[in-house]
Image 1 (cartoon, rainbow, N blue to C red):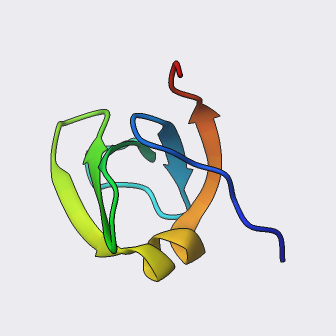
Image 2 (image 1 turned 90 degrees about the vertical axis):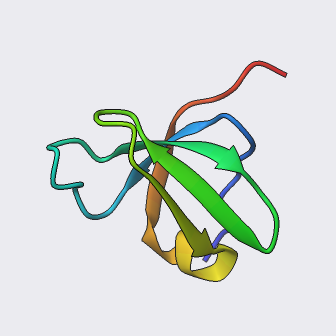
Image 3 (image 1 turned 60 degrees about the horizontal axis):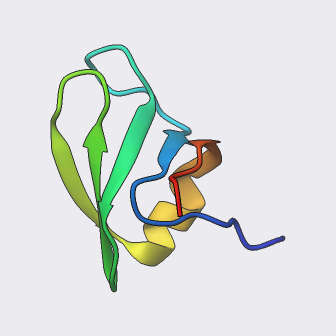
Length: 65
């Protein structure tokens, strides 16, 4: 399985949809844990990096470098 390439301020698609109706999330903090913010409603969640890697599908929008 290849490593997914993601970074700070990228918008990613998660496997499960958020209750507000979207599955697009923006990465707002990276470290041992990753904090993501729902693009639809603004709710933020912090999850461990290995769990995030399992639940992420793909990068929708790559952040400007």
